[in-house]
Image 1: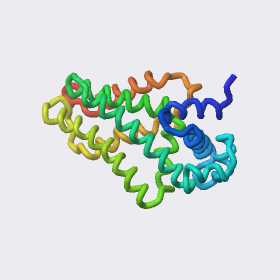
Image 2 (image 1 turned 135 degrees about the vertical axis):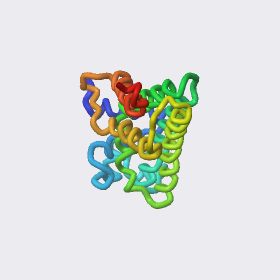
Image 3 (image 1 turned 60 degrees about the vertical axis):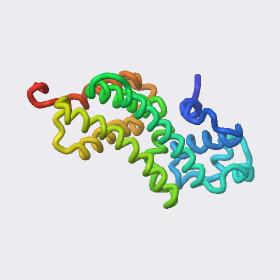
Image 4 (image 1 turned 45 degrees about the horizontal axis):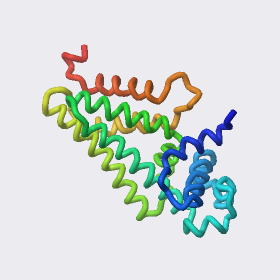
Length: 212
């Protein structure tokens, strides 16, 4: 039976497909596992290298600092989650269907990749200023995609949204927070949680007459 650490690495492994060389990828996986378990500041480069099956000296061949590892994890994680959200929002259907699909898939991604997502979303403050700005730009892109669907639905009369920006942030927070508490041992699958959240969000924005 796989240990919790092995399950975390297996989940994170899918997020970093295509990263090369293999040693660089192994270090990213080791860093995700360590950051998720111990937090960025409590994790040492020796700990990361050990989890990757490498020496501490080997780490610096691929990454200059521990912060650079966090940045690469954050960049890959945000790019993947933005791509999921953009594809869902740009699909066919009404604005309500697009919103439901976007929320469902965005939530599912944060559940399926909860270890990576937890590091990506909750260790942001540990990034250096330049890297922080780049990641914040990707986060803004996610907000823009979701806000665009809400604005379109509001203009078409499908949604009743008094504060589009505030509602966008509220929905984003709901989706992202799944990574904090999700457990593969829980009663609901990632897809079931996504479906539940999509329904809740549609109820949030439904015109009052329809909501009853």
